[in-house]
Amino acid sequence: MSLISSRLALCPPRALPGGLVRLHLSRNFATEAPNIKIEGDISSTFTTFSGRKPEPLPPRFLDLKKNITAGFEQELQKSWDVLVEKLKVKTEEVATKREKMIPIVNFSDIKAGTVPASTVAQIRQTGVAVARGVVPRAEAEAMLASLREYVAGGRLRGFPSDQEKKVVYESYWSPAQIKARSHPNMLSAQAFMNNLYHTSSATELVDLQTPLTYCDRLQIRPPGDTRFALSPHVDGGGVERWEDESYRETYREIFRGNWPSYDPWDLRGRAVAKMDLYNGPGACSVLRTFQSWLGLTTHSPGEGTLVVHPILRETTAYWMLRPFFRPTVKGSLNGWKLDLTEEDGTVLLHGANPGTAQEHTPAHHPHLRLEETMVPYPTVEPGDTVYWSADTIHGTEMSNSGSQDAVVLYIPSVPLTEMNVKYVKRQREAFNLGLPPPDFPGGAGESTFVDRGGKENISGKAGLQAMGFVPFDIVRSVGGSAKSEEMRIEANEILELK
Image 1 (tube, rainbow, N blue to C red):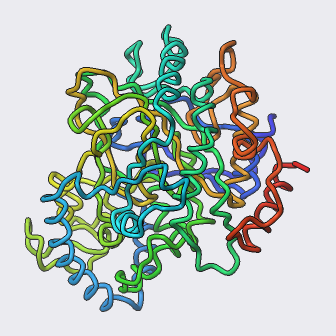
Image 2: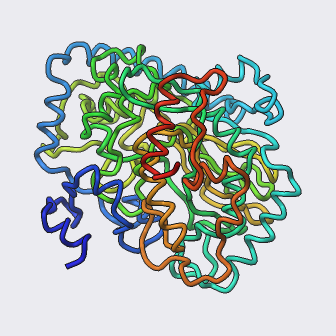
């Protein structure tokens, strides 16, 4: 019996609808075991996009909902009523201003420390941003040429699975991707974005100044594509936000009926949350402060770009509270009351299902006016990056009506935490072997590709540190804290670096 199977034999899985299981695994298993996920592609991450039908949740979720609301029923009802009125104003603003809502920052200002306070305030309010000129255009275009050569020939899996030319490739170790992730400007931009957060926890160690590399896929969306049409969703778990105790702590003010005091930028709870309780293929198990991609081609609204819902605090409060309310008059947005079950008695967390991402629909989340408030990013040029926060609703345009490929590399912002560095240790092993990273669908990956990238493609000391190959500096940086220093010491021990 293998190490993996023997460990699983000691932890019998718990059955769930649709054949999923909840794995009762120790934290050591979750952070040290190699990739045991089934093969798949990006569609595996979503319930509806993969063709699965959402099912009512098991009865234990009703008990969970009762436990969350117990003692706060009146406060929750009052807060919901205020929230619905606030959303009427916020959604109208977004529907009117559209992509003008999205803040733009220049990388030159990030590097110089001169990003205007007004821009930072906009990012905090919307949860999104565009950073111009992070990678010099010539370098981005060289990455694109290298990438096209690497994906040619139909050897890579991806989505759609029935097409030789994919839109989203299960490629993680091309030289271009490795170089882009470790580019010093990308790491500097990630540190800036990480530092928009803070933690009120006295015990959770987080170093926001030291970014880690989380290796993700790439997208080449051709003109006319309509298949990679992602509906509105939020990553970083589904039911876990309610089910995991630490994750639930992140939203404590919302669940107390005090959503105006909820701070989306406080990492307390989130930094140690279990975001992948069900080992879903493609489900992310690390803390990403921002998801992001680096653009390698020019593309504009209407050309297959990302769309986002640029309301953060109010919208997050809404979809976290949505499972506890339902309408009293069918079709009306007014007069919703606290009720933990659906009209037919079933239990839902409205778009959250075990093992897949949190999805949002007009039917489940009518107050968000998603048909009008999912707005595209403004035109991006090669070398620009776009960011969206951990709880930002996002998706893609339904088609690429442009005349060229929309090519992006997914490269999120990941701070130094115990959970994250343990993941990087496993990811480092996958990198050395050419296998898919631990969070992603399994299989042989690029292990047989003689032209896959290696350590020689990683740029600089900071890039090697972010991938877990070189020890982190222990000397406290300017503006650093004792907790950050302690986290770097612990990270070097976890990575077995001296």
